[in-house]
Length: 223
Ligand code: HEC
Ligand code: HEC
Image (tube, rainbow, N blue to C red; front, top):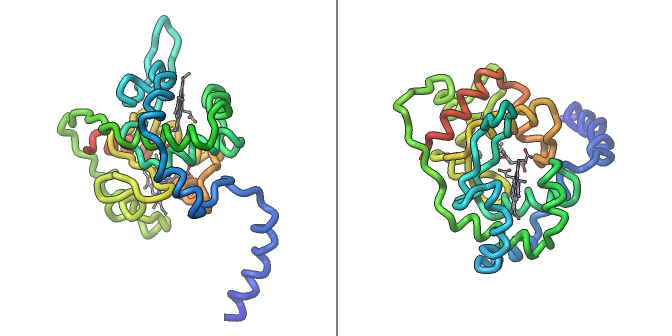
């Protein structure tokens, strides 16, 4: 007991001084703002997102055109509304950064972010046909994790069908695989650091590059 208290006392000042991963606090006010988001208004605002995130919010896979690689763009359709809201606020206040998304999100008010988040949550998740391939290693990580590495199974947070959970836990089913791999690599190398309590960074750091690729394929085909 004394040891636990001592460790706590040593760690506490570090936690107090550390920059928070995100400025989002799930107050009743923030939750209500998303809950009462105006989907019709979100639909109008979402016109400007289509060129990148697709007509149905399905995202885009990585493509090579004229020798130039266009990076993958995430699907937003069917995403948990509070997660989408948090990401838009995080880009806007600098907790997460990306050339295009930072400037786009800075142009949106909190209300716009809530309206857009609700609209995208009403769209149907894209279904990418399974090619029948079985991903044994990913299956195991999702359902059992790995006790040797202190890796919790993905399903305890992201749900048995990759459907996400309340507040900040995203749906993963049907997500663009190339984006999924890239963002896990970003958590792994710390360039994405807006996950509260470092939940995803701690996990991604323990995954090999091959495991990340397989998990991306597994979730892309899940529906
Ligand atoms: C110029 C192309 C472009 C446009 C236009 C665009 N986005 Fe994005 N968006 C991206 C890219 C690329 C990413 C991935 C960025 C990253 O890796 O952080 C992204 C990421 C996101 C994410 C994070 C998704 C996740 O799963 O974490 C959200 C939410 C989002 N965009 C919402 C929007 C909304 C809402 C609009 C319209 C108001 C919009 N975007 C317009 C390119 C675009
Ligand atoms: C302890 C709970 C927890 C566990 C276990 C967990 N995650 Fe997450 N995951 C989160 C949270 C919370 C976020 C969103 C963090 C943020 O705000 O950026 C997230 C985000 C993600 C994202 C980014 C999605 C996007 O649209 O950008 C991916 C990919 C992901 N997790 C994959 C996994 C995989 C694969 C596993 C299992 C190896 C896993 N997660 C296990 C909590 C968890």
